[in-house]
Image 1 (tube, helix red, strand yellow):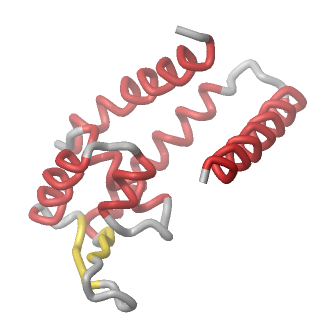
Image 2 (cartoon, one colour):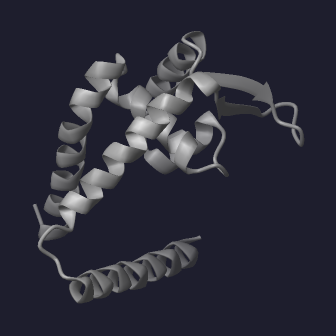
Length: 144
């Protein structure tokens, strides 16, 4: 495995390890938690399709977990105003304490990842990520 793939895999493993106690405390699967946090942190993304395409969670897992989150009152479904065929997902007030705890955990996770890295190094790191992101956007645009 190359260094980039190993880094991405290790990051995902570390994130899931940090999420596990919170998910157990909340009685949520990792996938259900990921769906809630994705919808809360990305207000422009409101559909199951967005979750599948952006988070790369399998459609059947999204469907099962969204159904459960709706049934348990964490999510609500509604018809989109601009397209009656499209169903939008919104986080309910019941989901807000989960989202707050999730954001606190996410913030601590990212702070922990940057421990021992001075501000200058962090600045260079984030600048490099922005350049790589632009380069990936350009590659994807060329591929269209």
